Amino acid sequence: MTQSGWRKPTPGLGVAEQHAQAGERVFVPKTKAFVAVKRVGAHIGLKASDQMLLDTLGAFTQAQDWEEGQRPIVWASNAYLMEQTGFSLSALKRHARRLAEAGVIAFKDSPNGKRWGRRDADGVIVEAYGFDLSPMAARVEEFEELYHVLKAERTLCQHLKRQITVARRMIRARIEAALQSALSGSWTQYLDLFEGLLARLPRSNATPEMLERVLGWFAGLQTRVERAYLEAVGTDEVVEELVEVGAVSADEAQEMDPKRVIFEPHIQITKQLDPVISNSSENEEAAGVARNGVPAELVEKSAEERRGSEPGQIPRGVAIEVPTVMQACPEFASWARNLGGYLQDWGDVYRVAGQLRPMIGISEHAWLAAQDQMGKQRAAAALALVFDKHTSGEVGSPGGYLRGMVEKAGAGELHLERSFYGRLNEQAA
Image 1: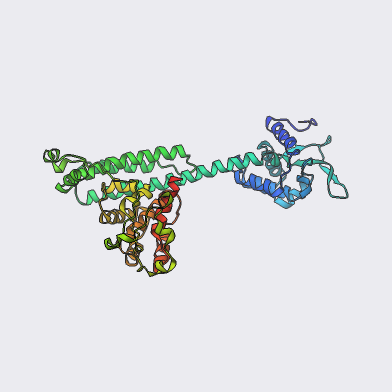
Image 2: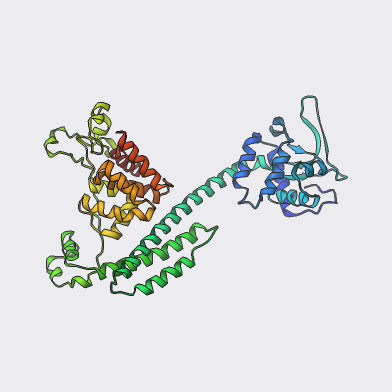
């Protein structure tokens, strides 16, 4: 960087000049350069006022200034820039310095420190001294790559925050239920531990690593609370279910104390997606499984046949099995395992869906409306889908999403089976 002697050189200004030289060798549209900077501005240390000054400088440049071999240099006076931005002279200098140190602009100084420039008849800059915006052009690809990294990080943080919220609600519900029912166990101690974890929640600017640690804390406490709860309410039915799913033998079950059993939940999942027929007398109508596991009926069934199905009922020839729901909705399956263990039939799915419903903020009114419109089985399947989409970051408003499904069901436009097999296809891709 050539110094006139009046501006103190710094490593940051030197790097900015290197970016300016690189920017002169590329063509980047002005809009693309500014969008790239704005997307990562906060991450690279720019404040809103810095970006306001950058926008003001950019307004002085013309399209040809950003072409290869040119430099978009702005020679507006301090007085004019102060008038446009409302900054004092010291604030103007401070923001310009921060932009340069961040490598977004460079200073091209004249020997006497004055800003000036001239254009030819075609508007091309012939000679100029002032604020050089070329570094922005040089760093567009860098900023775009950084933006995608930051975007993925934000998505992960949102997902982790939702998982933490669901775990918090689950723990609180279990502890409150145990205390209200006066169940045996160290529930006051668990409540103290829970309150302690709440106090350690990060308030802002949490990194994925930090949120993963916090989720680990809550998941660990949830495991302890669930085990204590199951132990406190253990019954003969729990032991019978353990035998049924093959977790223990009949001989081992006879030696168990039902009040002391700790139920290790299990969900039976199958990768074989055999279509289930809604009426056993219609077996001859069942088609095979199409490519990627999608039943042929979902592809071949005509619009007239679909409209012929009763509202809220699975179309003729196609039904959704419980294992299909569990496989297509892994987040729901994971939480269902913690709550109810082995889900044997749709009654189990309905029961667990009702327990998970408040954990994602779906009101009882919305849940009852879904059951009235779809029936209990399809409402449970719909809630499983909404729960999975919410915890995986695909849906921000679970209640609103479920209400939309209810409206589609009322209009005969809801095709739940397609949603489940579509998610299976995405998992296989």
